[in-house]
Image (cartoon, helix red, strand yellow):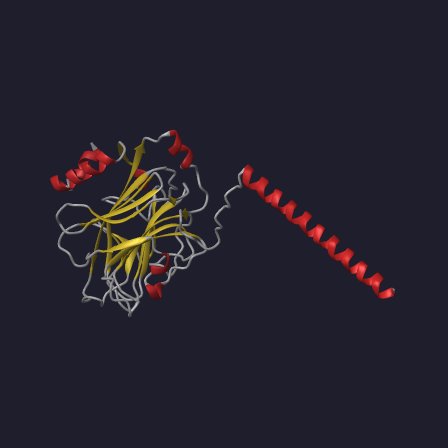
Length: 329
């Protein structure tokens, strides 16, 4: 019933889109995981030892939302799940609202959704630490790179980090992003949603921001390897420009997906975040083992070359000796 109630709000068009997705994908069962979900009335969040969520910085709880930052300069806040997530396949639905007094491009800076090894560590990346281990999804509302013209803000992007990468603020994270899309999410009178889906090493991000109860594709990236046992969280920061960054709910669903034996073998456990066919500093791609034939040919031609070099050496030495004897006669 939880899954039915959850998707009822997307309406008939959204349901049809989901059915079409399911027709070409595998059967998936969904179960809400309350230990990784943040919903109203947010009882005990940040104040009770029994709560599964911690507040950080300027974040505050009301009856209607968790406000990461108010519409004030130089604020920083976050909310983090205390329980590590060991699910293999999952989906995080984020219900959020960004609003403030600032006019277009005079607001900032956005917020991030995290699935990372470390939690509750403030830093420069939307209020959380840089050089993180895991996944960051960024709802960036202010363009820092002045020269770029093709990207319209607010903009959603994603980044997988093995701990060695730096988020480049001056270029709005472009050097390390997996993909992204424009998302006009400020000062709207309807609900705005973002979904992060991780199934069979495939990362998919969709948005519902138009008030039509329809999901729209934003990012679709295969070959994403994320370790289990990381923490979910969300953070925000304001600087000279500001906005209210409100989280209304975070709902994590466990996805039960059928796998073939080949998929089971391919989806083995990983201990460091990595993306296939994407070079990350500090992680060297393993060399392909040589076949027996290739190894034999390398040894054979090496021996032939060695013998050839010895023969040439003997000939040159004999010539040199012969010329030496002629000089003495």
